[in-house]
Image (cartoon, rainbow, N blue to C red; front, side, top):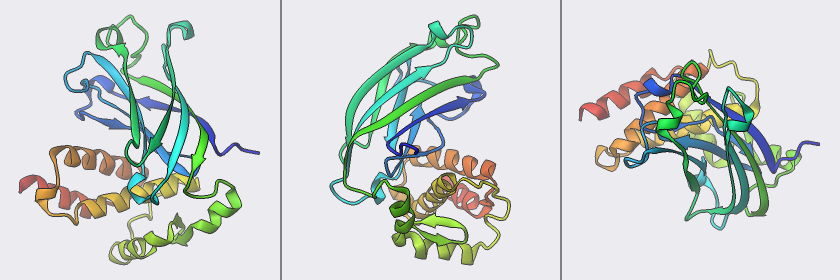
Length: 246
């Protein structure tokens, strides 16, 4: 039986050196009833000279009060020339409403990362492997598959929380062809993509004054992710362009 409190996954970042974004996110994964993602800063965090890799709860704002997870996570920056040269870091820490994300700083100096003979960037691709295990669980959804399925509701083939049903139905009513080219079968991935879509829709419902430059950068990244997944999000792209021109 699958251990829903533990998962190992890889994040492959292509064109790492030439990406325009200051902050990059992995695709979210479902572990212990929460969606998690990795993120990093390809140009350095606040002028730092080494790679920082962080782990965070993706949907923390939608979770009930009092949630918490005590998590052990192991990160590996893969060296393509030799496994022995790969960089490993491990820690155990609490994630909760006040601290939904934690980063491991100083994992790899940029000088070493960008060394053409170093083995970390091959064909300008960086690979990070994460192994995450929830050691202690407080609050949120029951981790059993049967109860988890009962917690969600189906809207146009997407499993969403009851509190999200109205918003998702509204999106499909206004944009009925939004997901006609979305081919993913994995329900966890489908739900994660829908959460991205809802987050963007909510973001653009705010006033321009409430949005920061970082919000716009992250929105750009999320839109690119959704487009690559097959969603038709031209209406959100127009909203983002309008905000940028304001």
